[in-house]
Length: 389
Image (cartoon, rainbow, N blue to C red):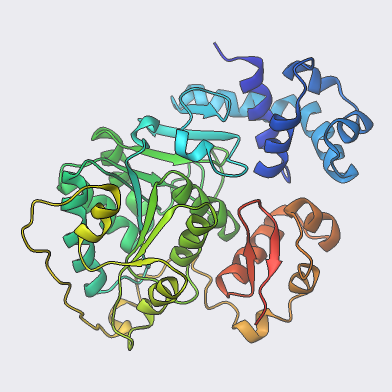
């Protein structure tokens, strides 16, 4: 039976413009004397007084909770498609994810969400992964699986898909975190892979409503969950402006371990990894370098050294996702965007919705593009900052 706290958090999460930080604030600040169902009867002034939220946000919540069809449609889809879900208040919510600042209020999943236990490790890389990156994944995954690690990645084409497939091939458990709703899995070409992940004991998870499309603005939240589900984050390949680097930076912000695989200084897909090492990530050249951090060691007597193979980018130009926006703006162009100026003082997403006069989808997509361009960053408490250049 679904409880009132679960229903209320699910309903709040479905309201456009009400993000994880706002819901987390409501969860943390709700007095024990207030029942969850009482929130439905609160006015704008009640919400502002109770949680010190902006008037525009209080208005969104009042309007959204008045619309019962939002909740009814989602519950009908959950029942029809046999989707599992949990809230941040539930016992089966992944423990590591609950520890991050403002974890998603609701997590939808197929499979075993408890696969994300304390031995979960994120393994991420470029959508344009080349032969060196693939070789690296093939070398790392079997030993990590043998040591009992569940490997978490983003379900995308390129490095993510190689991580999931190699984990399954090694008899391990893997979790794919999607940047879309579970009823619109992205990329569609990986539907069979997602099914196999679930069938072999892993999970496919998403913080997004079931019919959410894979918009670029969804990926910062997806990347934050990948790192949040994991004790550490291993970056195989990453350009200086890439989603994999963003995932690693979230991990650094949350105090999780970060590992980076070095590569050729002539390969742009290694530039991000080298930057992470400069920032304090542990350089790795074998699985032992990861496992030793956790008091483990592989059965290999001598760790193999990875051979650097530089592959021309043109051989992999067709691999990039249509939602990859790293080249949409050069850093010099991106610094001129009005949002950068607004964020010279740290701003929350809620503040930016009001100040920018943009709609939610347009704002989150633009923030993602600016984040990938390296001129904007979101810290672990959810505030957006312009990056000094």
